[in-house]
Image (cartoon, rainbow, N blue to C red; front, side, top):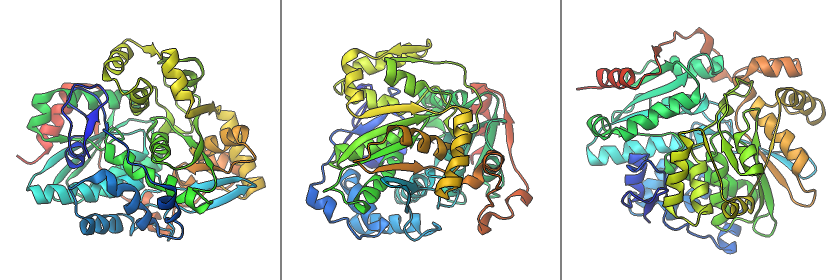
Length: 462
């Protein structure tokens, strides 16, 4: 199994090489050269298996020779052992034909744990075997950062620096990043918004002297291993509802497009997915693009769903690569145009995207109203991101096809908004009950590439 860049100018790599590299050296994102297909019999055989067993069968064809079957299965088992629910990703029925996929039972109460816990294990295994050490730098709108720090804290082979937009994440998200005591993890509160953090991260990867000098690696959803781990819960949930004999649809609240792109990969693998619905908040660039073909950046407006306050959706590049016939040249051109504010998707490529994706949006008022109504009529307390998914799903679902909405975070991560909408303040799980009593450790930083590079160089072991 080889991995190629969406911009077509970087050498093909193995799974392990692509994972440790993160971003391709031509600025593109790695995707598999070919997507392996599971037969209906393969999918049927997933019925009744544990989440870990499903994960092994779904991901194994992508991994190649980098990890033996025994090692890979052991790493999967370690990754999910700390989750707070035996099913790992349980389904809850909201209404006839509408189900909620709870993805918040991991250590940091967000869907990012499914990928980050695994990638932490994979990194540590690969780097220990190679006798190497790397510097991980990530950008976060809230959940990726806490999940990365939780996954890599205390590991011997990595130093972790997480850039997050100062004042634009929830207090729970911030404290999950700033309270770990391990010396190898660093929370950096950067001036600006998430797109600024993500831009500086990409700048570092494109500065090859710096990249090679600090052995830079990335664990944002630009990393293919992150997307791969998220493919699994599409299979586990669809199998629970009768796949392959029964089609299902998914609604995904998303800002960076990684979580729903994982659903697209599942569909390419043979999972009978009817529709993939992109649900956005008021920062609705993905909805606007899928509706009109125009991808034009606007100001990021802070919202009660901060993990979706994004205008540059990195993983959308992977979808564009397929929409343009896996030709890296037009994709590279579009990404150059994006630097000047935006681009227009060709009619043919837009039609290719619409074959797989539809979209909808929710305003702040609609999000709050959905939290209120879901609690009153469905008995379910939703975080703002999950509420956006439920609102859009209710508008778009076909009564004849089961709809699964992804619940991406625990409501306790956003207690103020949830309390205002429902009258209930969701408590943190017992294992996090003292989160607000723990001392914080954080570094403030300007939105300046030189300052950030100096900070990292000074903090890593010489």
